[in-house]
Length: 430
Image (cartoon, rainbow, N blue to C red; front, side):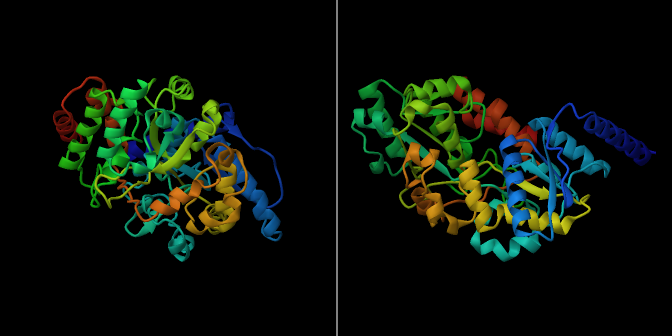
């Protein structure tokens, strides 16, 4: 009886899903008909949609006898993941290809994934890419997604403020050096060294990843409240207490209040992934020529100076009528040299194929080199072997929510004891 009820519920959800799709009022879609095999792609990012459509054009130029008619749809973030989940669970209505954000992938890897293993296209290229950027979408030796970028965490220093304070950024080796430099910046300029997010993961998570820690271990067991994570959160909290760092205006580094604050020279630095470059160019134009990119400080000399953060894995669903073609197109778009150069040129991301980082195409003049200078990839090359893979599992979405909505808020804004808060939330999640 329970199975029957579950089946009926899934069918009802599928009907609702299909009705929503047919109404066509909740998403944007490229509905142009064209020659070739139709492949449907779902994403939650319009820039990703544009990228895939352009890559489809390039595919068709190179494969005149195997044309693709790519129909790409962009949904709002939450709706996208909900619709995809329902379609896969119900067995109807899923696209051929879909984006899944890294913090959501755990939901799609539970049980038997309703996704096509991508090993036939990834295995031959695994030595040419940063492996962690496909491993985070893997399970039981199978890869189900390919990321757009490395997401290498770096430090963005405002050189103008550091010069005013007499701080040489290249003399900052460890986080202790960074905190000491922060005190000097505060004393000389009255400005904080950094801002820290209280509603997102991109400051705290890389700091623990640098130390071979994580929220989960490699077996999927919760490690949220281990000693390294407690110590690191105490370090962050102390920087806030010392006014070396302040909570980011608006709560995070993607808020309008934050962009305005930083654009006026509000803080001397911020650590975020390389994919954050586009936020500087688009939302903080007055800092053009003032921001330099350097590796993160290490926790000890010789320690890791980066971490791979964020990401979107693109998958092929098991409902595709053309899984082989979908897989080969996806490999062309996200694993090939051509595709990785386009990822940099179109999206400004640090692509996962490492040989691309030294190609002339990535030093060619564009809005990013105009803003940060021509040697952007030097930092990535410097830290390429210092990037741990984060551990992603079914608990990841709940952990991410707890960090975003409770842990950082309670410790960095309310000043609660990090050990107490981490133990409490970890017990709830176990």
